[in-house]
Image (cartoon, rainbow, N blue to C red; front, side, top):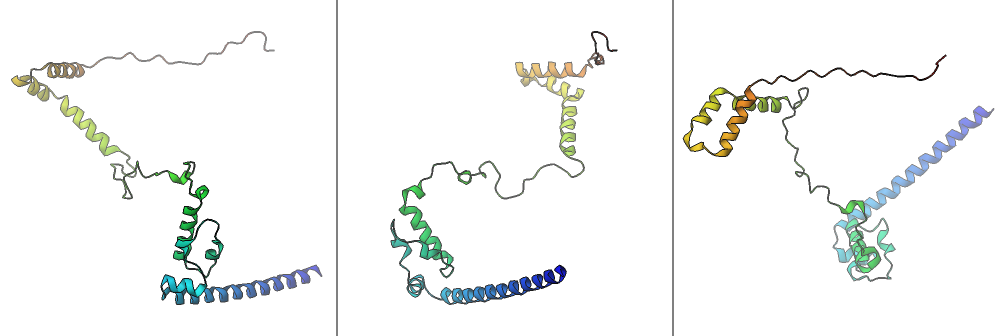
Length: 191
């Protein structure tokens, strides 16, 4: 018997939901019709039709709630809220503690996509290969002889560069690191 009651209860709930949805749709259609009529009028005519004061002439203590109804167009609501924030020093106080006060785009490159040498599946391979190619080109014997042969380049910086490049060509033998293993020592009897 409870199964029958639950079926009827679900049916009543569905009928009530349908009726509520229809009422909401009718209210929304009425609001849309009113908004369409108000769009053709100027702001002064809209304020007169709704019986509202000029939002720019409001001062602290006036009633701003009338501008928050659904019948008031969004641009008039925003004008009234701007006036409210300007009229009350407590609301206009910017103390810098709001997260949204910071401009997080200052360090970015704008809204454009950032171009990099990254390639999907390859990473930064092209960039690394180019760096290696430039290093090899700088260390070739022809480049060293060319730099050393130039008579006007006999500055201490060039001589130091040539010395560093010549030293870099000699292969240096690095000792192999000894493998490290963990060693445990136990004191006393384990049995």
